[in-house]
Length: 183
Image (cartoon, rainbow, N blue to C red; front, top):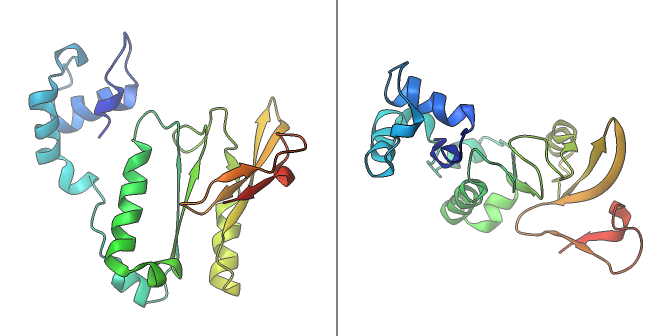
């Protein structure tokens, strides 16, 4: 709910706006008055039901043939990356690993911020991966990803289906995905 970003001299605007307009519903609310002991429980009560997607029962979706591709940046400043890992694990626990593996994949992106940005390989085609899965039955175990600086690709890596991670093979350019394997 953005509370983790309420630190430092200027917190991330998203966190302030969530508390100002959604939790307190007060355009004059000041982040300096944030009190974790009272504001977090208030946020859970006021906006939790509409903001938190925590129900692990995806059985109807899976039974209907649905495919879910999730991704999250390990460097996300607004939403804890562990939230996605924990949710994914709760779905696997609920469905069983065999059934879940036929319908759900999570890709954790090292160095990526909130949806993109950061030092990580934040450019990848999730739509193509899910299209291959839906249309051809090829579940993505990895997705090719890249990082760009000023429009030029300077690093590539495979994004690996959780819990696997990209491991360097031990030789070759560390900026080239060909020198990594999902383990």
